Length: 416
Image 1 (cartoon, rainbow, N blue to C red):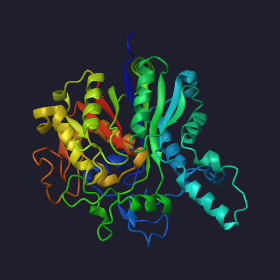
Image 2: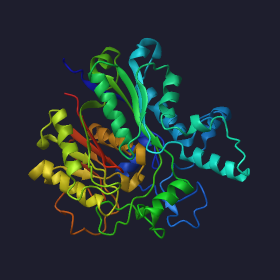
Image 3: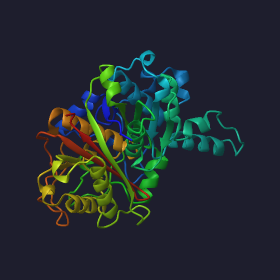
């Protein structure tokens, strides 16, 4: 069976550093941090009092009041980013086979805001079981995919992926596979997350996973820096339209690049910590390259998972050196989480978009907030510290790894 070629024809981004693709990309290149004191709730008594929130967000700017009440914030973000990608791809629903168009959407946590609010209401009412009838439909992680499909009438494959921080990369990989197998012609895919509330921040604080650099939030996300003390929570969404190449050409679609390979592995090691030698990360990158028939020396840029955690930022560079050998010193590496924070289930989508735009624009966004080399990390690797770098990017690899040992990588290539 001959596999179909798959291309990217639409992008949408709703992030802590930009609520459109252009704003997101421009701030990435400029090295703008999205970290600031938390406004979603009173964080006075929390260990971490800052996060990367979507700035000045008002759902009434995007939805009527009745619609907004039916959507958890993670689903609102999903709908906004999906609409951007849909418009960017210039899709005419009357001119496509909607039975061959689907939605696969990732979320690591889903409607945690709704869950917390409904639980509080239950307790406040002296445990009288009076729940909002939209409680379950707002909370479940798959509901974003359902809402997107209903809005555009996409009747093809439709589901959600849940694999912690790898969720949206798995969504992209699944959409890619179904298109190249001929089971669909088009997907809106990506991921969203909105977990900056008391439960989300308090839970990650209890794990000692997030930064507590409250005196200097904008520099708190420090991937690969000796002084890193955990990731910075982010929120938002990223969306891609993936399309079968011939289908895209036939309808005259703008094409950003080609998706050529994906990899999916498990560390099978620890609940939250990566394998110390990055064995799962090694295998997932190698698998993605093999799947795309890409030689290691053809890769120009890796958008790494790079969360700013003590262990993860050591394991991933080790894995890169194992997979790429001497070429590891010739490619650019960067962690855009240094600017956006960690968008959890949405991370893979927004970072895939950064990789795609690096190909399109010939610019590698930086890893900001680097102050001191870590002796446990090879300083000869080009982490694109503090300043964007112009270079021709023909092939880019995006990595995302999640709690539970979930690893996912996707390879993008400039169209031949």
